[in-house]
Image 1: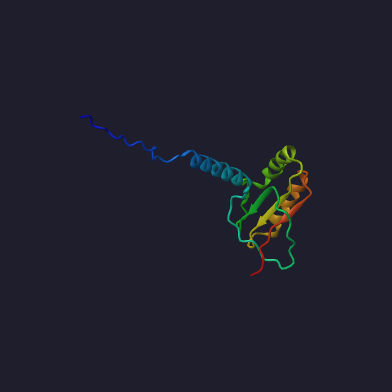
Image 2: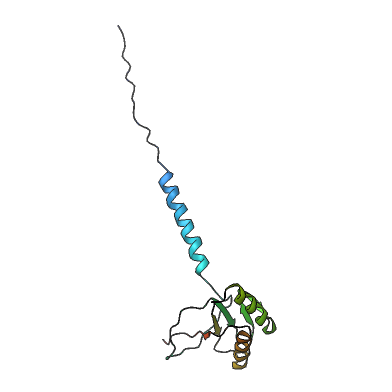
Length: 135
């Protein structure tokens, strides 16, 4: 008598990871691209409120003035005397850039004025001052 053996021939029940890897790679590329568009001045500043402020397109170069007079540019603390040289270099690389000054409401108006003079001397004429919307 001959015994019949029944082989169970099922397809493998493993999980195909290729679509998941493609999805994760696309997410990674998306977040890398998005983070390159997020710009910060590098300092925490309490902006003054202004009811009549106009919403403008954000500037490419952000400069913050802290309450104690510290100037932050490109996430680094910078001396006022160095601002002109840094802005000139940035302006040569990308002439279409504009500047937004984020001055703390407790900072001195004289520091803001001196900073604007340095920026305009560097060749950038479009300078905006950031404000907070009133609550």
